[in-house]
Image 1 (cartoon, one colour):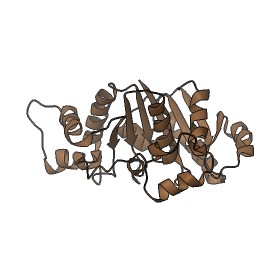
Image 2 (spheres, rainbow, N blue to C red):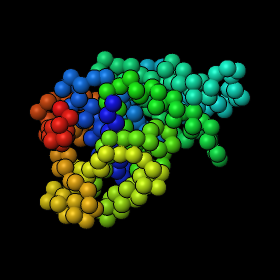
Image 3 (spheres, helix red, strand yellow):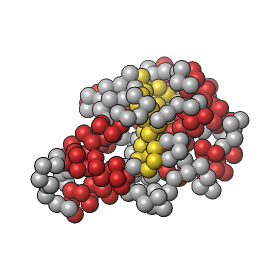
Image 4 (cartoon, rainbow, N blue to C red):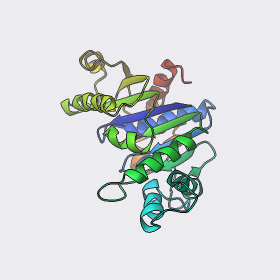
Length: 254
């Protein structure tokens, strides 16, 4: 199993990058694939043509509430991890023709939520083993990712914009990875739509991570996002899609 995580400040294009990676894997016949939207903004589902409510599915946050908060207590003979894993399989996992999908949703309770976190982490580690590729659209901070999704990833892609805050984000993310002891193989920099490609090498030197190129600015992709159309349906000669496909080819994923 390969786990690829996309992070970045809001508006840099990380959800689009994740959706376009999914399209590239689908077109290359890679399967099975699981997409995980761990960002509270929950943009990824729309970008890949999924309406969880219409499909009768709940976010993991909602399932945590109904399982551990509203349901209360414990179920005799059933561990917390097994309880939430069963609920995710039944009510949270969207199973599609080309990939499956999970939405994490927003924080579920105030105060300490160690038991739900521990249960969810165990359940998801068990569930994700059935996939060849797990693509995670993460919020800017990786604390959320480590607690709720996985502590072991293959590649982290940080999507840059042309601001100091974006570079600060990379340094913060790298520090958090060390602090929470997240195991990863590669940390890559990818320019977002507005990132000047000529600054790529400069970012690479300053931040000490490989720069892979940028997501091409593309009006057709902008129209798809604005109108809520699935990026999976973009033409295969779309410039933004080809730029993401090039990144994956250079990494020998497709």
